Amino acid sequence: MEKYFTLQSMKAFLPASLTTSLLLALFYTRSDEIPFLLGCALILGFFLGFAFPRRWHYSWLPLGLTAPVMELLIPALHIHVPFNAGNPGPALVVLLPALAGTTLGRYSRPATTNPLQ
Image (cartoon, rainbow, N blue to C red; front, side, top):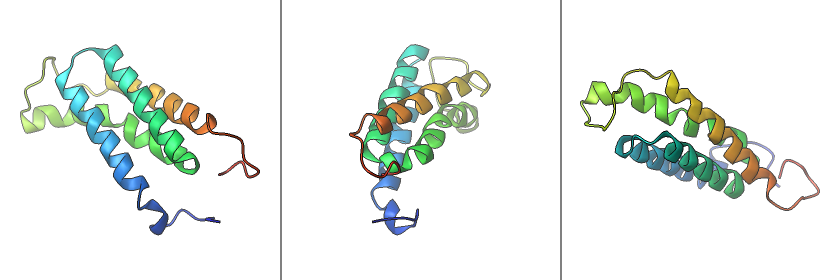
């Protein structure tokens, strides 16, 4: 039984977390629809929470901070987007569906004897 969050235990978690964050960044730069982005954050968060129930609390923050980071990188990298970028404050709302998705994914798994599994 794995008790510690070690580098060995992150072999599948890190690529999955980075992939979902990159997908959300791609969706963020291609669409100006906020409900679409929030839905994508909820679905991707659910995937991470369901696939890695012991690491759900490590998943939501990088996923939720993808939009504010992209909001800062868009003007710096001169990326063409269909909206005005540069203010990361409103993009922080993505943290809520990311947290909700990972929490729902975590607790949608069958109950085990150990609540941390």
